[in-house]
Image (spheres, rainbow, N blue to C red):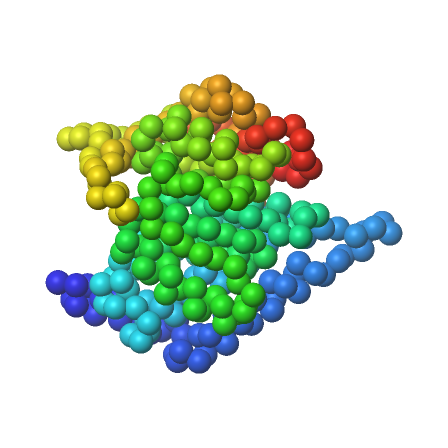
Length: 333
């Protein structure tokens, strides 16, 4: 069945880029374009404009998409099962509307990209909670971050580790590591500037314990960036109900101890409840952003403007950026 699944999409995968060498060179060219776009300073009224994090994030989408096509259509790097798993997870990014998917991708990472672009410190340390296949971890490392990705799924983490080789060819100084463990039991040997949690709150249990963990592991002035599905959106709420209508929780094995861990199945948390939990744990909420409108490519600039200026709380996705304390340079405000 798996062989049939991959053969079905062989034409699609082979059309994109013809040889491994061409694919890798294409990725390197995208990196060069990214660096040039970041370093280029357009003089306006005698001053210099900073690179737009949203634009940089969309460039990073091109790099990730190229790398995914490289790995899924190459046989020498991932096993057939790993290629199938990677394709199933990122099929929307590969087969659907690339312009729209790049917009969603940029909205998910632009807050962290902003810190990496504008920081005055030597190095920004980032903890990627529930990193899965490691895409965001690798992207943040490309921009100079020192990233640790943690996940419970050994199959996904194995793929993430194999993907590092590709990105190290694009950036030999890449600093990213992955760890297989229960994040709630992880002992931080050093604190982080940013803790990033994408589609993680809807699975971790209990949420309050994770927020307490984030407080302990963040530096003063560090950021907790949360992205998740919005239960205030009727369609998303219905899909979540379909996913957990038989059971809201299941048990997974702790990879270190072998104990059963409670794992939530699409247990969506409304942003206003999450804001209260953050406040109770002495986090200051800097912003709540809503995004995920669907529309034709022609209207994407308008959609981006609406999502930025008009915070409509029924969009499919939301972002909460909070800070540990008032000290530090509040870049995201």
